[in-house]
Amino acid sequence: LSALKMLDVGKWPIFSLCSEEELKLIRQACVFGSAGNEVLYATENDEVFVLGMNCSGCLGTGDIQSTIEPKRLDSLCGKKIACLSYGSGPHVVLATEEGEVFTWGHNAYSQLGNGTTNHGLVPCQVSTNLVNKKVIEVACGSHHSMVLTSDGEVYTWGYNNSGQVGSGSTANQPIPRRVTSCLQNKIVVNIACGQMCSMAVVENGEVYVWGYNGNGQLGLGSSGNQPTPCRIAALQGIRVQRVACGCAHTLVLTDEGQIYAWGANSYGQLGTGNKSNQSYPTTVIVDKDR
Image (tube, rainbow, N blue to C red):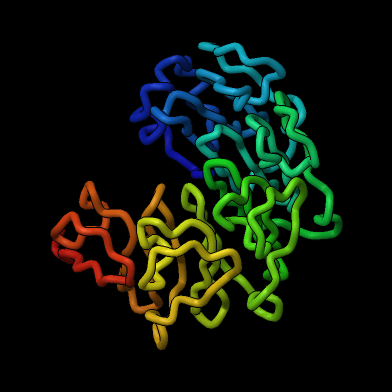
């Protein structure tokens, strides 16, 4: 969830539905949806409001009706929001500063982590296997969810047709499950999801990837799916600090400020100067004068 100044908020058309008085109170905001037509924001006094289209109940208002006036989410008011992620299903995963996790929206693949496939029209806390865990980061694929805890553990749930949950199978995961395999004894510091893949950066700067790889977005030099975490060998000796994913491409930032990109590139999203997909990490040349 980004802390946006009022000037920045005004750049999003969705905020034209808010009054000047309402805009002045916004402390945090997250604009989401396929066209930026839905928003969740928190005010200076920790009230939480939503506004917009409400596809599949992703506004959490208890129904699927769009709203052109801000509606308050009473269940989240008073809770300081730490981070939020939106899956294109659509579903929403949110973590509070206390480390609690709430989900709502589309749930046909159990991406809400509540053990059912019933859509969630209001925010509900996810507690199974997360009791006494403080979640510090969340990420969503199109239909799967991932969270990172303060002790460096990763938990996933939801759609798993390509191994994006990292369980070693392709069975959907209805409740949070810790991702182990080669991450068992690693401390993870950053996570990200593509549409159907998952990524984790560990404290020594290594990057582990799993899930769908049809566009080379896992950076393994192949296009085969990966059902469990696998280290990107091509980044050996490079300390990665953060990873970010688009629908089918991936970027990382190193401790030396370099950017590497790989995966789908049909729109030039890798910044390599061409539109060829890349299955290995490729250096992005940044014009430092711009």
